[in-house]
Image 1: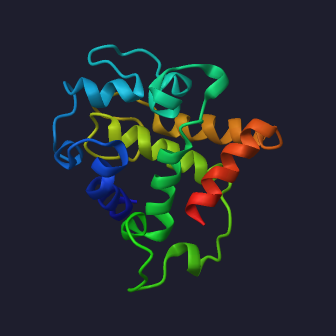
Image 2 (image 1 turned 120 degrees about the vertical axis):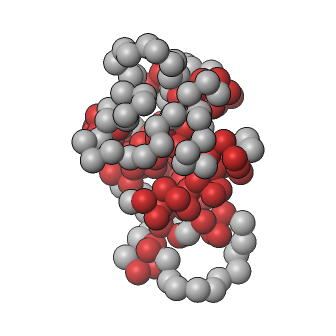
Length: 176
């Protein structure tokens, strides 16, 4: 888990079009509105976190529930880093050890893999500096375990819907 998050931190600036320094684990993102606004988190507001209101998941970061997960490219990039390695974002040149995608013979995303990608996005953009064992952010109070379960359930339930199929097809096309 930590090696993936460390790899993701090194390329997060490119994924989110922000300076890489914002994503160093000890960087104070608490007051960095341009980062925390992407996930809809506010400092000092200890309210229940609603993953469906995270602007990063929508095109142009405008929340419109009919367009949830339509900003699929950020999800796809995070998944690609997780299963193909961070260098897969930049080059088709192959070298080094085989990727997890190759070792595990992955050919498409599952609801769990997509939920993992979304949860990772929220964590990387949050003010939390480490991923705690109980799944709740020490600084943000975001329940990452709940985000994962909620997103996974969403995709399991809606997997056959055409809108979700097209999002999954886009993610698969980018990752694989």
